[in-house]
Image (cartoon, rainbow, N blue to C red; front, top):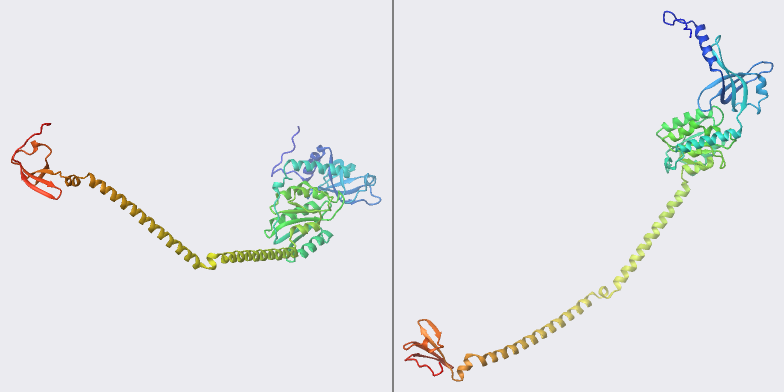
Length: 414
């Protein structure tokens, strides 16, 4: 490889050298296929070159395109601003004016079938990443303070959302961002508006609204960058694009899909009339429940008051007093009967005791002899216990006799 001339502050390259090097580098790229959206067509009669501007739908970037006018005239579908195309050509750098353009040799329009196939592939990709997961959906506030609205300027969608929402809740406030809703400029403008509204702390819900249209018209709302921005937003987003059959990818990633802009207005704010009717109904139900409770308590109180114990409180006391007196009489009779029985038993025992006691024995002529030794007295049971000279005390039935032992005499059986 041949090295170029030295380059430094002392030996700078002239403009022509830089331009030639850029031209050489771009020439090495060769021919390429490029997809984009036509935003400008300049086709003047009698000219040998047609000029177009090709824009990236997902970014604010464009590329100048030149081609033979016949390519534009003989395109398979009429080319106009907003048409999605795939072109084949070679990049050219013009050193004289420092400009870059794509010299196109072939133009192919992107058909509806191919657009739908691409949308379906993107749908599968986003679904596989979990961006459609219901667990990611954020609930909408019951009564948002401010609603962000992204829609086309002066369109039916804007009118429907504002009219229906204000009819339902007159105090609702809107922060409106009018953007392109189709064509090459739609996605960048919608992304910018979405970022602005999401950064506004007063905005509590954002609505993307657009009327119906063809697949090409609704294509910006199936853009991958927009879908990812909706998921990344911290503010709940409602997608109200087209009519019921339309299903752009924004419907799947948004926190709520509305069938139409009118349906979105009904979903984001409550109906004041319906809410007032609900409050009235709840008040009536609460009042009815309270009245029913009072009636039940009145009936219960009346039943309690009608009972004998409350109708004549002293009667129960008197009845209890009579019962107490009856029980006292019964207890007294029972005690007297018990005492009488015990008294009879005691008399019988006393009689038995007297019959077998020493007094009865002495009454039959027996005596009890005790030897007196000072203050002690011992019953004499044998002759040896009362030797001659012992002081004796002899108890008989009617008293006691003092005596002295003169001697002892044993009986024959001792």
